[in-house]
Image (cartoon, rainbow, N blue to C red; front, side, top):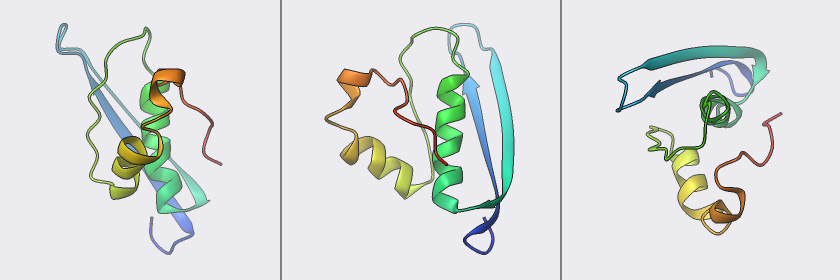
Length: 88
């Protein structure tokens, strides 16, 4: 995102090690923040999964990393990676 808030984009790549199938998607919003777009990439990636599975999440975002490892650490078993809420 340039000029926070301002225009921003998100993207994800899903790779299945069993089938080697890959899905890539991206999008954006005209008025957003970098944190919203970083989380949106994770949300959209998880939403694209067609069945429950283990997920290895890679991100260069400290915000996403800290969110998954610290903030949500106690919640993950309860929500089993079904995302809590959409970023708005």
